[in-house]
Image (cartoon, rainbow, N blue to C red; front, side, top):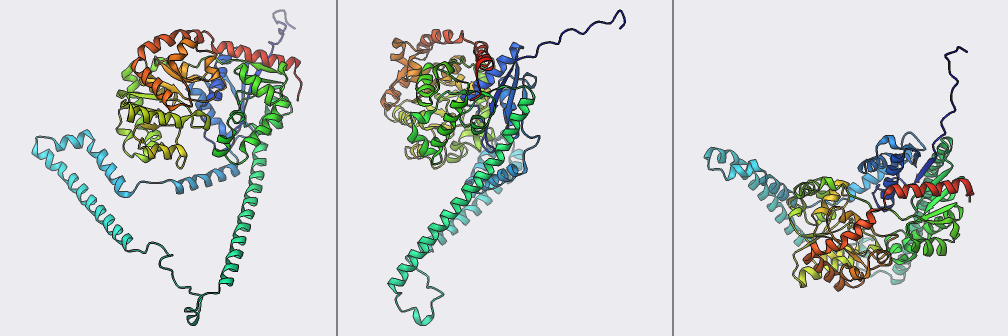
Length: 578
C-alpha cells in the first residue's frame, strides 16, 4: 500500500425503502382518483426529503399510465423506481384487450349520416376563411366560394331524398311478424291448412326453453372458468413484482387500493393496508346494483384477509378507523393508524389569469375527450365544441359517478334551480354518465342535457381551469373517508364551495358557517336553496371559508409523508407477517 493511498471509508448507510403496491387489472382505465392523488403527493414529498428510496410496484400494463399520472403532479422519473413483473405486456393480455377494443368499436353508436353531414357543414361554415368569403364584398371571392355552397346543397338534397325513400319503405313494411306470420316452410302443403296440435306445440316449446336455459348455464360456467384461468395468469405477474421487490430489499409493502387481491392474500412479507373507506359497508345495495353480482362480497372477503395479515392499517380519519377498520374488519386498535391527508392544491399559477383559464377550458372542450368520448357530446352533437363555458355561470361537481356520490339529487336540484327559481346556471360533472344508466335517463327525461354536462377525464391543468371559472364548487356526496378534496382544490384557485352536511365535513366546518354552506344531501330543496344563496353571495362565502382553508393549508404533504414513513418504521421494527 502506497503512502498516499487511503483506506476506504465506511459504506454509506442504505436509505430506508418505502414501497407502494399498486395492483390494477388490465383494461381498467387508470384514473386519478382520491387514493392515487394521495400516492402522487406522497411520492413527491418523499422524493423531496431525499432520505427515502421510493419504489412503486405495479403490473407492466399499468406502468405507462402511472408514470404519466405522476408527471401531472410534478413527479420526475428520477424520484422513484418502478418494479414490474415483466418487461413486456403478455400476449394473452394483448389478445384479450384487442378483443375488447373490437367489441367496443362494434358497440359504439354513431350519429345518423345526415346529422354527421350537418355537423360537418356547421364546422366548415364556422371557419373564418369560408365564412369571410361568403360575406365578402368582393364578387370574385364570393364566386370562388359559391361552389362549396352548391356542393353542400347537392349532397344535402341527396341525403334528404334517400332518407325520405327509406322512411317510405319503412312505412310500407309490415309492423311485425306476429301480425303477418310467414308460413312454416317445413310443413307439407297438404298440412298447411290443418291447425297444429296444441299438445305437440306446447311440449316442443317447453323442450326448446329448457334447452336454451341449459345452454345459457353451460356458457356461463365456461366463461366463469375461463375468467378464473385468466386471473391465475394475471396473478403470476404480481407475484413476480413481489419477488423482484424482495431482491431490491423491500420488506414492507404499502397496499394502496382495496381491490389488490394478490397484495392482500399472497404477499409473504409485512404489509400496511390503506383502509381509506369501504363504501359498501354503508351503501351495499347501490354498489351491488351498479357492479357485478357479488362484487362487494368478494372485495370484502379480500379486505378481511388483507386486514388480518397486515401489520398495520392506515385510515384518513378516526371515524373510518373506528367504524370500518376496527369494528367491521376486526383490526386491533394498536395496529390501526390515523394519518389525515393534507389538502391537495391545483396548479393555481396556470389559472391565475381568468383569460388563461378560459382558454384552457376551450382547449379541453375542443379536444377528443370532450367532443367524442363524453356522454354530453353523444346526446348533443356539436354543442360542446361550440360552447364558451368559461364565460357562462356554472357550478362544478368534481366527482366520479357512484352510488354514494348523490349525483341524482344534484341533477334534481339543478332542475329546481332552472325551472322553478329561474336561475340561469349550468352544472358540469367531471364524472362520466354512462349510457343506459338511471342518471342518464333522468337527465334526458327532464330535458337537461344542455344544462347538466358530463365532461370526464379532465387533465389536471384543465381541471384547475374548470374550478377557477366556476361560480361555485358543489360536493353533494353522502359519504367520504375524510374531508373532501374538492374544498381545498376549489379554494386554492379562489372559488367557494357548497357541501353536504356529513360527519367528515362537520368535523372541520364550524356550526355557524355550516348553517350557510352545508345542506342536507337527502333534500333536493335544501341543495337548491344553498346553491342559490352561494351564487348570490359568492364573495361573502369565499371570505368566510378562507380562514378554514388557511388552517387546513398549514398541514403539508411533507408532514403526511413523515407520518407514513414512521408507520413503516414501526412495522419494520415491531410488526410481524400476518
